[in-house]
Image (cartoon, rainbow, N blue to C red):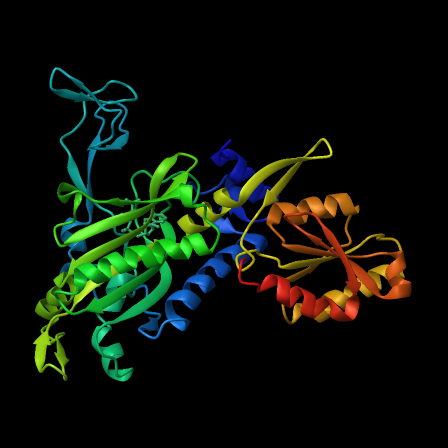
Length: 442
Ligand code: ATP
């Protein structure tokens, strides 16, 4: 049975992954805080992305551009003009809906409010960018936007990176960072929020090679999810039909995941042609073309954009890893997270919490492991309860220290997935865990 979103939300709260923002004040709707366990998961996702996309490739550079940008950036990108959703308001109950909301009923040509049946206004355009003012004066000339995507920070730094890193095309620029959209219909937990984190690449290629790179990137990005444990049957690619494409896009595909609420976009891969660099050239007056030394050609590169969301990825990894099993007649909840994503890699658990020698040996072991792995030392309960907690947060290995350990210096290591146990000398523990945690299949 697929897991429900409610089950994931309650696990996240119970185990310290994700909390409702401002909960003590009744909560800020659709806004979430990552707790001590969740922050590790999200950090691991971003690190896995950076490792695979930047460190392990020789055609990628990193970037961390500001959230604020010159307002002209958003005029050039088209966001001021067309990053809009059409909205309608109910003249009766004053509620606001997206004009394409399927629950709006048409009564003899007139659109009716799905809540109270009242008359609706004509659709009005609503810009999804958050606006604020820079500096002490609140005037139109001081308007500044919170970026609705990280991509534009990459385009406006294209020449900086090209020249300082002495790059040749094809190459890409990768960036992770917060983005903000005043979404009309946020919801489904961390799937759609107004503040979220993106992991974006703009990959610059020679026109004519764009189709090939576009297909390569769809495959590369799918493989990334699969290698990190997402089940194949829960992932699919949906190519946008012509009528769904943004006006600048040559082609676009969504990598979709089977979330509890159905198939939905996890990541988009778009062939944006030369739209962005051309527009920034026009609006800034700066030449953003590329000169190819080998062929003596000058051109504006085409861009392939794989654009992922760190929060949406976190939700997909949580849902995919969740399983319930029956063990000796009892329910066991396990998050079978990939080793590199698991928030805690090793938990050290003293079998008896009221035996100071055992607790102290466990503390020594934990201290020794902490420099290498995210390690949790927990002596707060019975071993059954401690295992349950570690299973639910996806800890791959639990090390227990018992009475016998005091004599023979051996400890027991329990594997999260198989629940099989190995007994080894504490001095071999580091090597054992290094091998297990970094073995190729996990
Ligand atoms: P959607 O159709 O779901 O609104 P989009 O096509 O507008 O998404 P993009 O602009 O392609 O999304 O953004 C790239 C990625 O950023 C998405 O695939 C998603 O993972 C993430 N993302 C976009 N909007 C949000 C949001 N409001 N909350 C969380 N993640 C988001």
